[in-house]
Amino acid sequence: MQRTETRPSIILLLASLTAMAMLATNIVLPVLPQMLGDVHASGASASAVLWSFLGVFAIGQLIAGPLSDRFGRRPVLFAGLAIFIGGSLLAASADQMSVLLAGRALQGLGAAAASALSRAVLRDLFEGPALGRAIGLVMSIMAAAPGFSPLIGAVIGTTFGWRATLVALVIAAIGVAIAHQKLVGESHPKPLRTRHGVGKLSRGYMALLKDPRFMRPAFANAMSMGALFAYFAATPGILRNVFHLGTIGIGVFFGAAVLAVFAAASRASRWSARIGAPRVVGIGLAIIGGAALIAFATGLAGGLGLPVYVAAATTFLFGIGLTQPTTTAMTLQPFAAQAGQASALLGFLQMGAATLTLVLLQALALSPTVALALLMAAAAASALFVIRPAFAPAPAAA
Image (cartoon, rainbow, N blue to C red; front, side, top):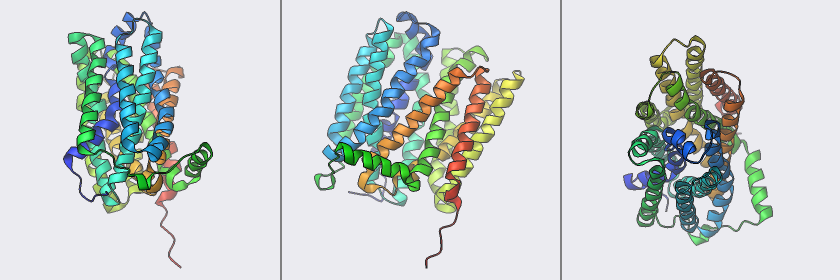
């Protein structure tokens, strides 16, 4: 079943699955004020709309991955998409905050299956350098979700209202389910499936957590993902309150800046083959650190203006485009026999880091730009510290 070539249709499908969580998170960013107003909530509740999704999304992946190792990818994925559709419809019908948060939580649970299993299917279908190329292509295409979904949300929201953005998610999930059935079907055949009891499941996760082949790149991946979510959470407010951009302007900013992720992710696998994956990660993290310095200067000097913030955002996203696909490939490559579980734990670590950075972003008594810069710098520095042993040359064979 494993392949050495990358069919564009399959890559596009898996990118769409991976992007479901990003799409569900970011499509509502431009319409959050209208959404909160209609459910009689204050602007301070905006973070609850995000973390109610992310918290369940993180835990849901720990369930979806092992279930797919046992029962196959397709039934678990389709169950997840059905839950996602139900959650989207519930949130779209909300007239109070509790119903909206319940719908967002169900969305998170369903998206957890799509995200975890997209990586597991990649590991099922591809091996070696082909896996790195496939992940790079998926990440390149997936980069469109965080970049263009705010613009899509802005257009749909201003034309039809915020509830229509959630209906759009329903349509997207149905389309992905149909495409998966036609293009992939079941990628994890019965002879390869494993039964996970609670004890075995716990031991499997503990073994991964203790394995430096998993934890070093997984930690770097999670830290960079946390910084990315902090960027998504802080940037709309910065653009609106500091630079006075409107809803469409914010959407255009996200759409234009994401081109940096395309540019970097399309080069990540080629650079990994040339200089080694750990060094590509090191370069990406250093670039993220440089972006943090630019953003910090913007926050302190206030008057540096929108072009400087655009430079910081573009630099940051280029670093993310190098770091995310490379660390994903490094994390999953050694664990073909437990791809679902490894992918689930990676996703849990990603969303755990994302939730933590959102909490810290809100807790820091600093300007949004300075708080974001500090979180970006801390994420890059800690990730670089953890992954640095991977730079050491392998010991010579005896």
